[in-house]
Image (cartoon, rainbow, N blue to C red; front, top):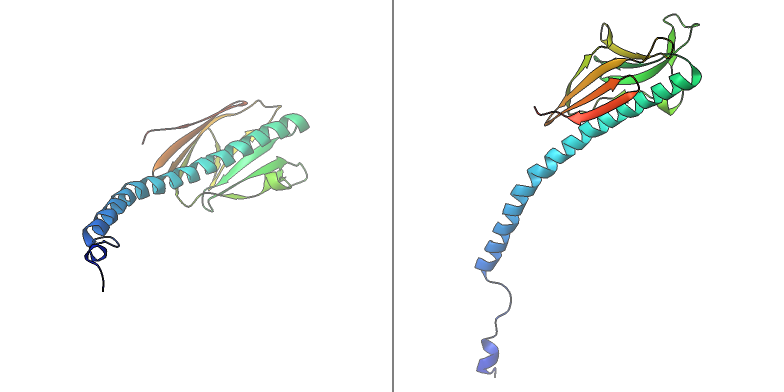
Length: 166
């Protein structure tokens, strides 16, 4: 026979308690998910800009060290960018830089538009030339993506990157 005191002991949670916990979890999720999604897009844009900056720094260093003309080429149609080095034996005068620095880089999927100021323009290509004999370039790259707008300014050997309000 079961004593009356043991029968009154409560085990588990009530339905009301479970519903309240689920509501709290839902509210936290609704607040956190959009923030986390936008952060990922911003990181992608930031990585894209960092890749460009790294390539510019390499171009400046190599041009200065080897006393050779280096250019960064942005292929708008194929959404790629890469480095080329002056070579007088080539028909167009430039050849791809060998190794990791010469690797063709892709624009990020969330990059909507890339605008260039003071770049040489030829069909779908935009180029910025780093030539120690001719002087260092001045240019600007506006990277417009889903949820972000970043700017890279090149003033000779100085590079600045910052966010711009949309």
